[in-house]
Each structure stands twice: as structure tokens, then as C-alpha cells.
Amino acid sequence: MMDLVLTNKEGLVGNVKLKVSLGCSDHEMVEFKILRAARRAHTKLTTLDFRRADFGLFRDLLGRIPWDKALEGRGAQDSWLVFKGHFLQAQERCIPTKRKSGKNAWRPAWMNKELLNKLKHKKEAYRGRKQGQVAWEKLTSEVSLGFEHINVQTP
Image (tube, rainbow, N blue to C red; front, side):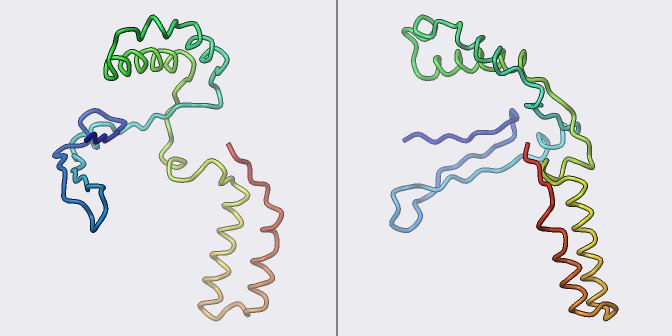
């Protein structure tokens, strides 16, 4: 049996236990704890900036490695560590990182300023309707106008 728990930080997960199967399933449950100390150790959030990445160089760096010779005679764990080392070196060289600001960290990239303004207007209109200040007909016409023509840009 093989279980795998993937995290992006060292020491983030602890107390991993294998539990009984769920109902008639042949899969078993895995119980684990997310450790608070590991989460709070990193207060500055950084992320990979794929918009400025050089994927051509990334492809070339990984393509130059003679994988047959690099992985020859190794087991699965050693092969994984060799691949992971080469991959992370190429990633560090080709994909820059950026710090996320606190204001923009919570919203997705496609939610632009225009869409946020429309949503703000919609919330204000509904708030006015709940307080009896706006007629239902006016609310539906105001809220529906403009949402069909919003330019949403995906990353």
C-alpha cells in the first residue's frame, strides 16, 4: 500500500494516520493535522510569476539533460529526487517570483477593476432594495445592465 501527502512547505503536515475504510470501499481514509507553527512561519507570500517566465529556456534546460544516463540504475525514490532537483533548478532560473500584495491576494486575476465596480454597484442596489429605497423594476434594470459587456481577461 502506498499513501502520499503532498504539501508546498516542509513540516506543514504531521500526525499522519491510516484509518479504516469508508463503507464498502477498498480505499482507506488518511487522517492528518496541519501544524500551525509551520503555517505562521512564513508571513510574506510569494508566488511564481508565470507571465514573465521564459518557458523556451525552461524547455531547453530540461531537454539538455540525458535522462537515460541520469536515471540509470536508480530506484523510484532516487529517480524522483534527481528529477525534482533538475526541475527546481530550471524553475528557479526561468520563472521569477513575485510578492503578492495583501489587497490582491484574495481575488483571482480575472476579477478586474471594471467587474469589481459593477459588483459594488449591484450590492448597493440590493442594499437599497432591502431598505425599501429602490423599486424592484428599477433594481432589475440597473443590475442587469452592463454585466453582459464586461471585458474579463483570463491570465
